[in-house]
Image (cartoon, rainbow, N blue to C red; front, side, top):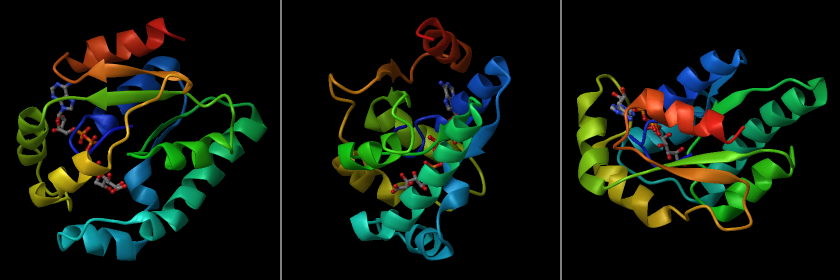
Length: 157
Ligand SMILES: Nc1ncnc2c1ncn2[C@@H]1O[C@H](COP(=O)(O)OP(=O)(O)O)[C@@H](O)[C@H]1O
Ligand SMILES: O=C(O)[C@H](O)[C@@H](O)[C@H](O)[C@H](O)COP(=O)(O)O
């Protein structure tokens, strides 16, 4: 989890590979209208994210019911979004990728062909509610190289 540019897709896919489990890219579950909003520079609100979260919860529940592990990259910016996802699998754990605005902006600008404009970074940071003490998971510093981030997550397995 984390704001745009935090490294969810990169770190999540590497983690899934290490674990030998499927990787799901949360962005792929946004309704087309959400992608259009973001591409137009309009931040998503709670109502926009409801269907997306329902789709993510379904993926989580299916894996849990099958007794299979998986890694899902998704922003999950607010506590209540994470509660919604945890309801699908109470054993869900979150790795929160966190860092400074400057580095996030640099990383957003450094990737090509993504619909998410840099202008939405501040709204993402404003919406972000960090992991709370009673939420299973860990917070990670995005200044670390991807392999070290993966190792830190695996060390908590
Ligand atoms: N820890 C890291 N160190 C160096 N580059 C990174 C790191 N994490 C991500 N990146 C790069 O930053 C950009 C944004 O990462 P990405 O995984 O697309 O973020 P998100 O999915 O959270 O939006 C990508 O170009 C990615 O390769
Ligand atoms: O809840 C949201 O507002 C979105 O999920 C958002 O956080 C996400 O960042 C975009 O979908 C762009 O995707 P990237 O995070 O891959 O840039």
